Image 1 (spheres, protein in one colour):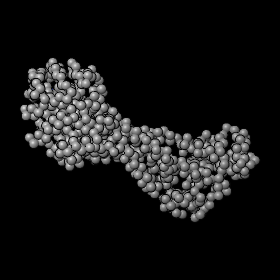
Image 2 (tube, rainbow over the protein chains, first blue to last red):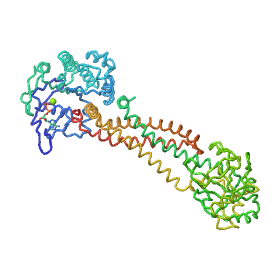
Image 3 (tube, chains in turn green, purple):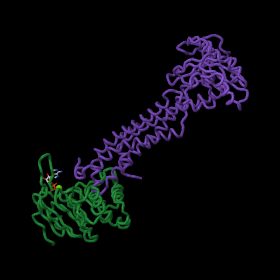
Image 4 (cartoon, protein in one colour):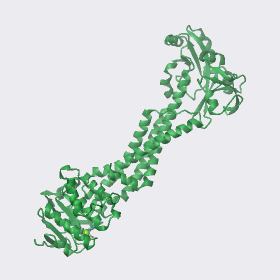
Length: 219
Length: 365
Ligand SMILES: Nc1ncnc2c1ncn2[C@@H]1O[C@H](COP(=O)(O)OP(=O)(O)O)[C@@H](O)[C@H]1O
Ligand SMILES: [Mg+2]
């Protein structure tokens, strides 16, 4: 993946080869600037790679147009960011509703029971009428996770989801991700700087200078 | 309801208010101007129909209806007209147009031959007496009430100060009348008038008589006054162009206001747009959110515009002799123009928002 800044090319990723089988939970570690976020954005179809192939369920994202990539993201991918990225003017409930509305597809939607269960696991039952500014960072991230999974995406892409959280909240978030992976068989790619966080994944991929230097091995 | 739309409206109260006012302004423009035009034409039409003449004889095709009409018809046509079988009464009328006394619109002053005009129309003096000198006029009750005039009051006509000699009823023709002689003197047009009104013995035969007049006095225009409403809006010069200009202006106002309002919020909302994209929102969804917000603003503006127009109409009617008539078709036009302007104005910002790069949008501070 090459970014172009004026006349200078920045090779954010070079020759990355990564396969994630369905249902696997991998973590990606590496120094800042090594291309982790770029990789995640490409996997989620937010970025178009300058070369190479990105296969999601056998479909090549790199060969798709913007609309098709957006549609694939809508159907199959849930993003969780370090900065939470909630709609600031909407309540937690409102944030979930917008995600459902964008997704639109009723078949995949959680039943209200499943939704209640998820909110219970995330300890959010009493927070749904609060706006992001009225919530702690940990609560905001839990809402963001709830929002990422209301449409049951096959794949969850998390970019330093615990980067802004204290250890207690980090534990809740990680536990939730693990549960999603184990119970709902969701495929998870999580970027993290925290070795303890990385340890809950099935394997840890190490990156440096736009390359994967260690594919890790299944625990 | 759409929470992204509502929360955005509520989060930016000043922007919402100002853009609502902008759309309302466009609606008010259309409602008041068409209301004035319709009110003026219909009021005029009602009063003209009360005059009691079936046929009008004139030189111009507009039958002397044009406010710019000059007195170009010789009053001596009244003799040959009287000779025609079936004609009952003939009354020459001169018309002069001056700008309205409140500075709004314009006002017609008629010079009449009182005996024949009164015979034809049943006009009666209900207070004071008929004009006797060139500086005396008679006015109708509406004019007297609205302008707080009574017998003996002074009134400005042709930029001169004349006196109210009497008040007449019913309200027919112009609201200010003086003698045709006086009008001829003021306009230096001896023996001239604008039009000659003709009442026939048997209204059922008016078409037949119209044809006889046209045959006997060729080269003139002989019109049936029951068709006046068709000719009126055509005869007031520029009225259609004026209305069209007002409609165009209204769209431009609402388009620009919404364009500006939405354009500025798009930058503010860059992050939100990035979030929508990360959730897989297609461009159409993002355009839809922005457009719905613009339409909501426009709809509130339309309602506000109607309310203000009604209040303004009430105030204008109280303060002046102008009459306003709101027609559903025009109000509907005003509403549609407001909504269309809003939708159009939001389109460019919406498309820009939808085309933002998601990763950059998410990184936006
Ligand atoms: N939009 C961009 N334009 C140019 N260079 C970029 C852009 N985004 C990231 N980069 C560069 O690409 C490299 C990888 O960035 P990133 O993927 O964000 O790293 P990480 O997430 O591992 O910290 C860095 O050198 C960064 O400066
Ligand atoms: Mg990063």
